Amino acid sequence: MTQSLAQNAIALLIDLAERGEVDPWDVQVIEVIDRFLSQLKPLQTVEAGRAPYEADLSQSGQAFLYASMLVLLKADSLARLEAGAEEEIIEEPELLDPAAAGQPLPLHLERRIRRRAVARPPQQRRVTLQELIAQLELMATTMADQKPRSRVRRPRPQSRTQAVRAIAQLAHQENLSEVAAAIDQFLADHWDEISQGQDWLDFESLLDVWVNPTGNGVAEFTRPVDLHSHSPQGDRVAVFWALLFLSSQSKVELSQEEFYQDLKVRSLSRDATTEPEFPAIALPD
Image 1 (cartoon, rainbow, N blue to C red):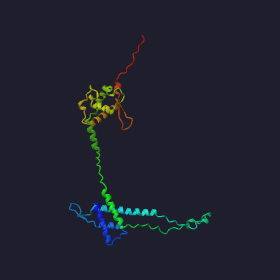
Image 2: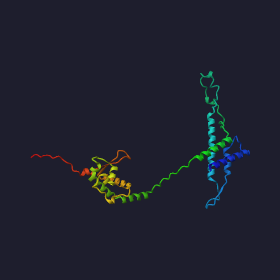
Image 3: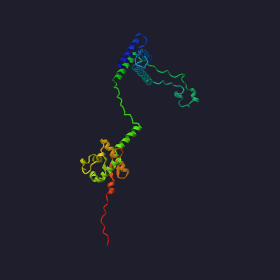
Image 4: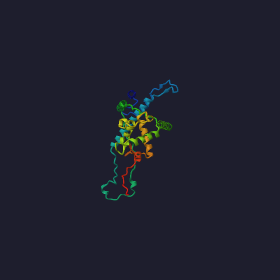
């Protein structure tokens, strides 16, 4: 589509030059683009509810793109010429006279400044037919080599009603109070075994022992069947919610050095149930 459009535009330029309608050494870009757009044939459609004739939006859009890029090319050329041209210096004989350098400036100096009656005419640069054809071929090749961008479809966000329903279903499926009670009893009975004498235990380690107690050396504990989740992610969420619930009751302590880092757990219920040992004191008779 892009190559054929460029070829049609080049053929139109050559035809206009051969017929003498355009000057090969001074091509008016806007007029040529208008001529090209006027020659686009309307397409007849038979679809219901649409106009009988419609212009090819693809070709007309590419034509407008070509026109804007060509005009930009011409503007850049004029800007480079204007930047490279030396500025004219208007010398005032009275101000630049070496003999009068030591004398004070005359009064009412603003009256001696000569101002231009009109602004300087903008510089013009002609666009030749050869340059126009070369730019059309370059733009057609560049657009043909571009790869189409793949659109990334983002999941549609859930509405508030759907989010509330999902949370309610999760809370219904995972009985938080039962899971919290089971984990509390589990930590109180087997804290020494799973913590290996340490004060703090990683959340991931606790989760592994809770999911597979036998494989982690806790053979005396069997997790209740009704507390089994259908997925590992469900177990993770249930244990985390239960720890938050126990933390609010001061039965466990949660610690995290930085955000989004490892979470550590410490059991407080075992410390509360353990009776302190006092040394025997001999009372006097």
